[in-house]
Length: 227
Image 1 (cartoon, rainbow, N blue to C red):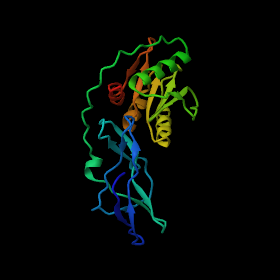
Image 2 (tube, helix red, strand yellow):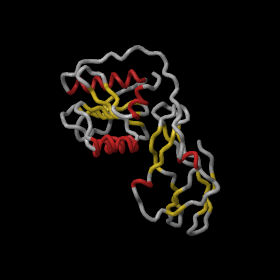
Image 3 (tube, rainbow, N blue to C red):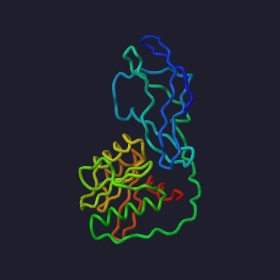
Image 4 (cartoon, one colour):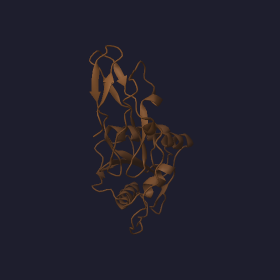
């Protein structure tokens, strides 16, 4: 649990003790922003997408992900954005730990949509995720998968994924406080790849041999995690 820091509301001058919420990384470790006790909290006067999220680095595996910025609701009605330490905002990318030895991934040939789902589930199991099942929240198309600390979307259609598809998966992962991964049979539109890079969403393409291929750096990092 993160350390409590005093937060004073500039509107009513009340002082609160606040501890930042921690979130589970896909590796199983917890991640929390380091708060800056020497900086003043700022009232939230308007909402902007780019200001709502904070990129944090997991100290255990070096994985980067976006999480909500720390906020505190004062009884006077003011919403305060709690400042974070500079090292949290500008966390350097840590070198990933060397992967443990594991057998080569055994793919399944993809002939049907069910085969695509099976290939993605086997790949996630190979990465070390356990308890893989159908997700409770069903996406508007494709199949949702869930495991401890991760939600995944498998898109077996012939339409390249668009930015909205990536955002929907990311929002689902946020509500579950989990990591995420997208598996597509037809690939991704360029703007979908750009959106995934901004949201730290790993993208994979399923080739017909059943072997997921990483599309972006976040997928590379996930593919090289220890089993």
